[in-house]
Image (cartoon, rainbow, N blue to C red):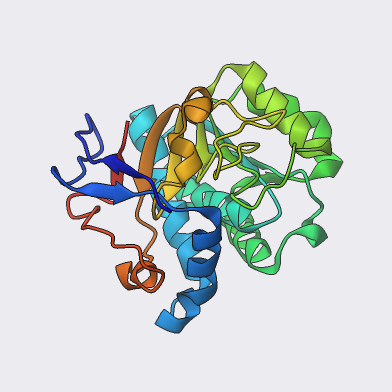
Length: 257
């Protein structure tokens, strides 16, 4: 079952079409959509590129400008990390000083994530792996913004190891934090925060809001909730029985609350 949140007005980014409902999606349904996306001749690498641009656009809007800003992106091994690497490239091109902090060795990154890691590094973003872990705290502490692209909706249980360390460093920095798709450490079906869990200033859910983000238990971790267009066709949702209105008719980013 998919919960619904009434569409409403957004101050700076966009407004959702009034009088319509934006469906929230479960993890199981989102996995099905991801598996079926190739039937539309769309590949995940393309969706990561779209996600990266949308993330960068929200960061630019919240910071008011990107030129001269210090942005630290926390990028995990999976697709969420790929989104973060793609955002790094856009933000670098828009004049920001971008550092990407990665808790995994390069060889542990998923193949598509490595492609975006390579392109962001070649474009000029500063990519730091565990061998540079001594620099991690400073990059996070002195950033104007932290972008959390560590863990996505497939998380099972509390973050461990370097992932937990980075989440704690980000939270203790008191910086503005954008969570990509969901705060790392949050169960996006139930809204249950694991320990630790990112406490985001804003969360950009990709495609549709994940239903756990709307739970009361999640609110203090989600912050302001935005939904971003990454190019998933409405027909892909329709195949699993979810009817999606024209959410992005005015803007590629919509503020929910």
